[in-house]
Image 1: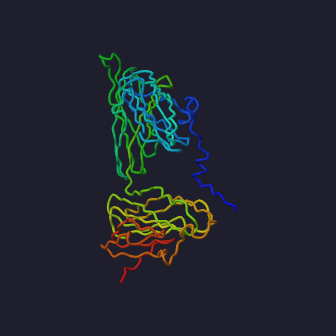
Image 2: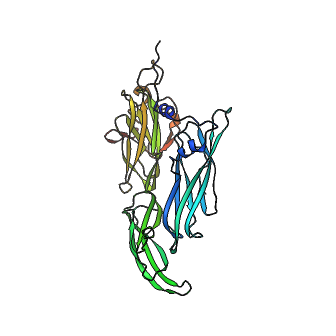
Image 3: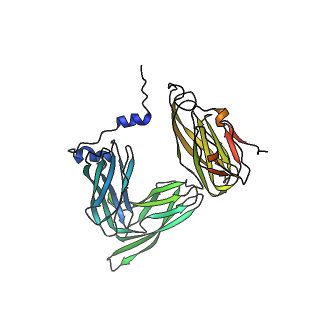
Length: 415
């Protein structure tokens, strides 16, 4: 009897992953590879008091889990944060290091030691450990001071114009000037004006002050904000003529969907699966429509207004094997806001003996129709098996709407 072997996508990835290094392997062989050999970061010239932070990114390219045991610095000039959970195969993580620019002036180099270890799944094998050295470098100008050292917008709602102020102080040449201030983002606007220029007897130098106004425009899209403002000065040395200032914040979307990536799994043709997506708004809203990648998808959701909705995605695998990808767009009456969810799955060839996997049966599973629920009534899905024969676990309230390819169709209330 000839047996066919099907290599699943995740198995193919596993086969391309590297085995764990041997005990005698040195840090030069596998430690730096986790960081793609990007072990040094140079900030260039920065102002005193400025936020100077770098994220060393690492990816586990091996088959065994990796743990970060500790991350330490040779000096007390840094703040360090790193993940405490194991990093799975092809998983990613970041070691975040902040350099203190208030207590240091001039050239500064910080050495960070990251202690890493493999944790073999085989209890008979010993862990494999190594240490990787990371470095941060910066030239901290003592004559230019930012207060505060970072433009922080925290959490803001979309569609707002917000402004932050930064005081800039320079001590040195009498003719020192800021010539320009350039933002790295079209959603962050910056302006400046000179507020003082006088001789400071205590410093025996000219003291120059500026006010910097940073505006987060109402066009800023939802998501994390990590931008930079570059001050251009009339310093003669080119390495000193550009001074960066970090801008951070979070624009909180009015509408979110979780999970953002909907994993459908691996299915045979005709097999069905249901997944839930939680949609949240900053105030009560209605789902006005849902569209999917193709006719293999259908959706059910409540039609009443509330701040949290549970959208159920029903997927029935078609006859064509291959990767299933696409976007599910959820439209609402929340100011016309919509949110997208990425769908991902795999349809295998239908070459297994009959009865290996359950087939979707419209007559038995109810595929193609949805039972409407009267407003205010509640009916647990646990009383109604899904297409795979397993009871659901979501308690829905309010009328349900079935969404078919091409648009919404509200089901009539039961008589």
